[in-house]
Length: 104
Image (tube, rainbow, N blue to C red; front, side):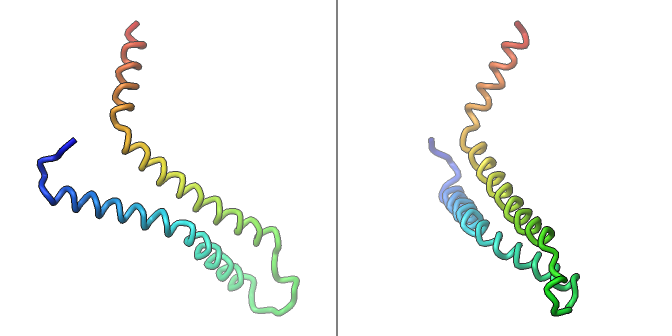
């Protein structure tokens, strides 16, 4: 499959590919940054009392699980969008099949 766009379309495709690779590489590291931010905000809210009773363990663990789940879902969403954009012909064929079945 060739395009008549010249070198501009090739460079644009390489730029998009580099951006997608960068996003997919950075998302796992963003889990650490997201949880660290959550832990800092929780520490600011609970106060600066040095007793061990100020830390609410369930909230801390829910925050840990929540940040990991959010970024994993974000990673799955990006992978899903990339996979969907790589197979447009299959989606068109499924649409035609759906139209044929609904007319019958």
